[in-house]
Length: 497
Image (cartoon, rainbow, N blue to C red):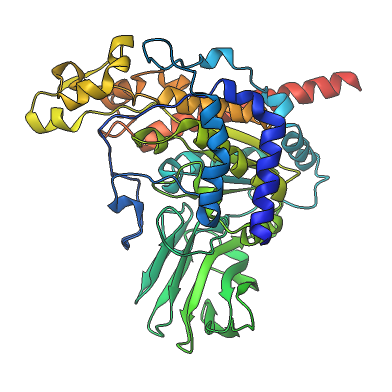
């Protein structure tokens, strides 16, 4: 009941404050071509892992039916957004006002300033949630290194439980573990990681090993309930047993103090142990940059996170800035209804705003990507060039794909990638967030093709994911934009004294 009431509150906020946005939204279809490739990941996959699927479903969790029905009003209000020939009218991104960084990131900048002046008593925390571009910790690790180089290293922070690559630590896992992801049809509840691993096998284990310096403390979030059992923790060989059994289904945060380089977690075998996250940190102040990316995630994925678990996680983290990086996988979904999508994403942002009221917000639009129709690759008629769709091709896209028209047998941006990006940009402005267009430093439409051909390659051959070099280049540009606004604010403050 609490979750449903929360949803109604979120949706009411959207209807009251951003109903004007519906006049700009569009509804469209997407090209046939999709890619299942993803970033570096752990070796275990499950039937719910999005890497095993070719489509990304619209997600709404336990509130999915309510979300679709209540947002239907936005679809009906936007049916006139086509011209007389049925061509969808997409507003230019440049015509949508945005919130500048010095306005949207005021609270984050104040926290950084306190840190530089050594007046802050806690670390500055950045929480970055997103899709496959974030899961491999390439783009995010570069941002982490730059922030920590300037403002200090407060430790690694919260991580997923031995699922995807995490820079600075090594995860190993053995025995039988069930992996559940909020991007698939797995049963929740999920917290901010959107993932959990479960096992009742006393031969199962998860090990975290530091690659350089030891951590000073660690904290593990687990399920607690009548069917949950005892978990055994080992810090550099020192073992401690803690029960997760409880009268009601909930969660438990277990914090272990003491410096160590290795953390080993094992179920005792007297009940299921479910791990949602593992956090580590040091005693120094500085910046901790937490990346939580899921391959196949969309901006609707956070709606599958339990509001109570989410609140528990985020309030413990106390983020000074939250970054949302979505949009890629939505653009590969053929039947996505953009007006409904935009309304539901606003609900997701509102929830994050509510659990992190003091955090600044950045919404990152998807990087440039391109697709190749399946029939082109299958027939061998594919042309290794990239060109944006013409107005005529957009108007007749479905028919041309059905007819396997050779004119589309080339790389081109997904038909509505621009519409997804415009939607996220509108939502950023509506929620007082800074919007960063990842496609701009890539050169806009078909920039990904040039990045693929660059030496060294800046993007993978799938024309969707970036290489290490491309991720680092993108991160340097974003960091420079943020710091330019921060330094300008500092100069203004100094001049006013």
